[in-house]
Length: 119
Image 1 (tube, rainbow, N blue to C red):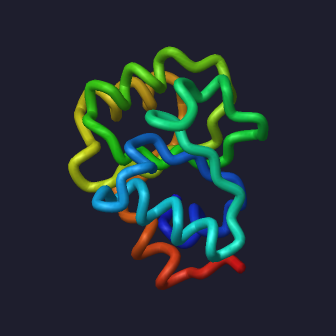
Image 2 (cartoon, helix red, strand yellow):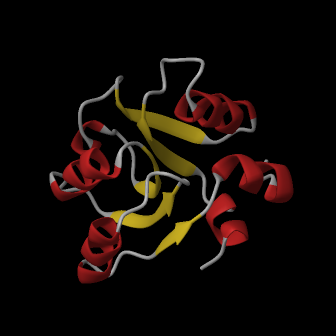
Image 3 (cartoon, rainbow, N blue to C red):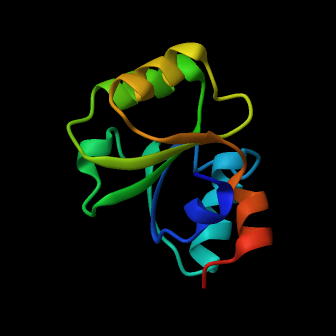
């Protein structure tokens, strides 16, 4: 899996502070929405992945790794893949995703949209 494959997906869930204009999660949310992606936000807007009302293709982690792992573990939703933003990674998250056979990539959605714009 690579960033180009991820950006071909349509349904993203951003995990992080998507309400604070200074945060990357907010910038990613706005960029994805303005490029035609369907987006839900967990952290400040929704409390869990289980509240998302569509099939989750990509979870984009933009949050402290401890909180990100907790959100992943507390979800019963099927997740196709996870994009881990710089600073949101941890070995524990990678080990958890490996144990659940969920593919992941460490990368940046903003770069992905710029290089591989879906819409």
